[in-house]
Length: 322
Image (cartoon, rainbow, N blue to C red):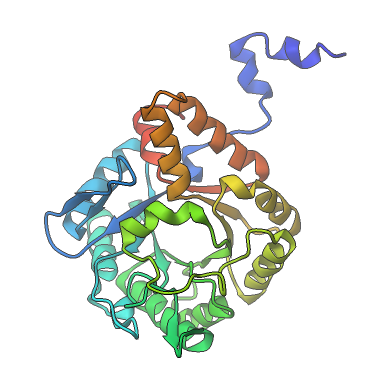
């Protein structure tokens, strides 16, 4: 009996047939950073191979990606004027809104566009919400986040993804979308987003590091798995269509627990720090990049992720690793 799986795996042609976990290119979402201007392609030093693009260049980048099979992207607007009230976040002329309109005009429904809904790149203090007297004001933050989601919906976005971790923001976003005729736009909630050291390179990419304090009052304590599931199920109750766990690699247990607790699709975000560590180790010859990337991707899927957001997506398809 102990030889059963060894026999089944003995030939590579049959080995795939008995593999318990499968990956498909349709599972992947590619994150993109967009900045104001024209003809801007700005490499991000902390994330080799990843750049910031102006809206016109993002169209060109998306066209290249479409040829590889990348048909879903997640947009982060960066480089806007930072203010106390994050007014640029919900401006109809924001760089994110401009990019959405440009992409929709060029690709129509061939490209599925998801927009990140958060205030950290738009506030002068770098927090994900409105700060008053040194404290993040939950309800005022939720009002601005809902306005941002509506602005993106009016620009043509296909899905919104609130990443702020304010209480009640999924309900507020669902209500404002429904009340303005956008009932069919789904919400992918960053439902269990942990206060993690793995976000370091992203904060360079989005210029979103907090100027004071930290985000531990509203992002999840990385020691708390039960609370993460509770937060996610609350978002499901409020109307989320997809529940996301972020980061992914250190939180496979949370992905697995959430998969058991919810019938909704579960997404995970393979974040910037996870990406940059692999790139750095590969450049030093410490690991084989393809092997470790694929092992990670299968781990996410094996844990229960239906959707994987990753900066590795372009490599996966361009280098035919998948």
